[in-house]
Image (cartoon, rainbow, N blue to C red; front, top):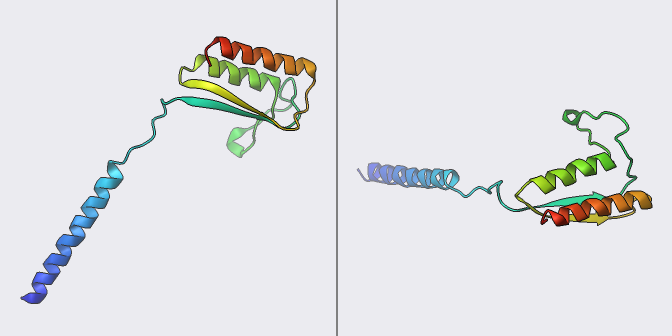
Amino acid sequence: MRRLFFLLLLATLLGVVIAGGGYLLLHRETPSWGSAKVLTLSLDARLEDQATAPVLPFLGGEEPASLALLYRGFLAARLDPTVVGVAIYLRDADFGLAKAQEIRRQISELDRAGK
């Protein structure tokens, strides 16, 4: 009789632990994708005008940095209401004065858009 009581008690406690763990897993807060975002850009390599070769992203390739890629990113940031700002990190960037002026113009457009 005593053994049956302990087995029932153990089964009840185990059930409570499993139910509590399941509740915590199913009701935890998940981050919202609609919250404010900051676009980060790191320029640390040569900046081409256009991408030189097509890249297949599903094979793990990454599109090399180009001015055309920056245009698309800045345009998407201007149009996306969840983007609140842009952070640009320059480390050993290899581009001339004309490209620097074009990046500055794009940043001004972002500023006019309220980013």
